[in-house]
Length: 69
Image (cartoon, rainbow, N blue to C red; front, side, top):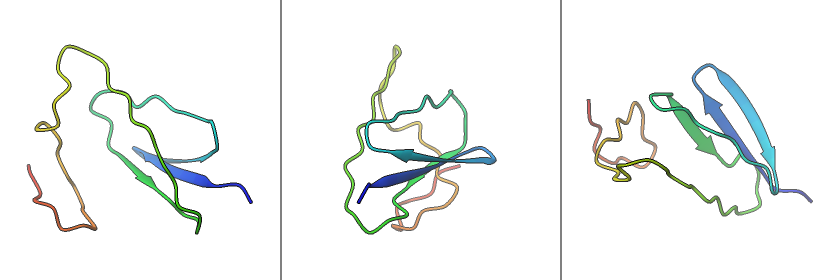
C-alpha cells in the first residue's frame, strides 16, 4: 500500500506519493492533507532571509488554532 498526500495550491489539487515533492511560491494559498489511512511524515523546507512562522495567515483551521488576518 502506498501512502499519499494531497496538496491544495490556490485552485489546484495535487496528489503526491512517497518521495515526491512540490514548490509552494510565496503568497500562495495552500493546504496539505492526508487523504488516506496510513500515517504520514511530511518534511517542510523553508528558504530565504526570514524563516519564522509568525507571518502565517490561516484562512481555515480544523485544529482551532488562532486565525490571523
